Image 1 (cartoon, rainbow, N blue to C red):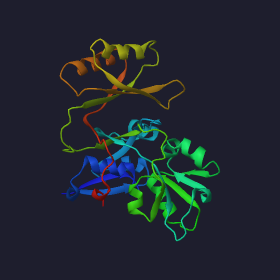
Image 2: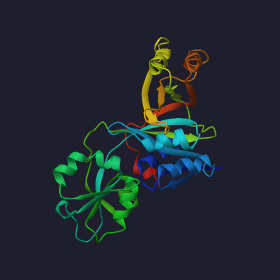
Image 3: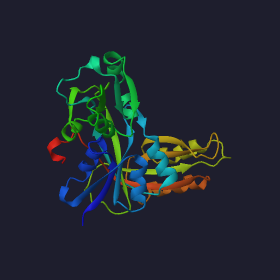
Image 4: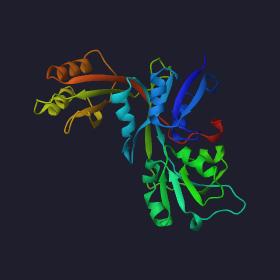
Length: 294
């Protein structure tokens, strides 16, 4: 039976690359592009798809708050895997008889994170252009490809050039070379995605409102056990100013003693602990070969 996998679409996004890296067996998968992150997660939560792949953090721009907020407030889906993907941005224009040049570009479309990753190029080479945001880099590429008569460009993946009638006007326009994005796989079933030596556990901690020093106590529960935390992210509880959830990534899998003991200690001081999953972590060192993505 084929797995139905939702990803942030349309075709040609970095999220699709991450999804295909997690599930390389093409004959076992059915790819379901969704127009935004919320749709990816909601589709999987309603079991219309078996799994969902969404971005959660970029090394340059930080967390993807929409993903965090939907996981916290809207859906209860365990995290099954993490995939880290190198991000390379390109300036794409529609194919036409008379090629367009930088001086002719009047508008650039892309996802807000992609635009933010290319500030230097835009400021130095396209200071005159108007920037408009889209739900994904692939949506921007599709939009520009469908309007070849317009002096428009998109910031997106090299894969977009293979899928849409586009050409790359400038390669690798991102500001930093150490640009990586973390993607997570969510779903209700065992994904059978293989083994990784690196394991991670994620939890959501809600502090009591009347306990001064509660966050210190939470961190101390991990510190004296010598448990390493790789990330602490605060997000509003939406119940009032100054009220936050804390998303904590722990650099080890769930064990029988240390983590249960830490969680029990945290709960003993009145905090709520929500377990988000223990999962393998993978990394793609180079962008996926284009001809593997059809």
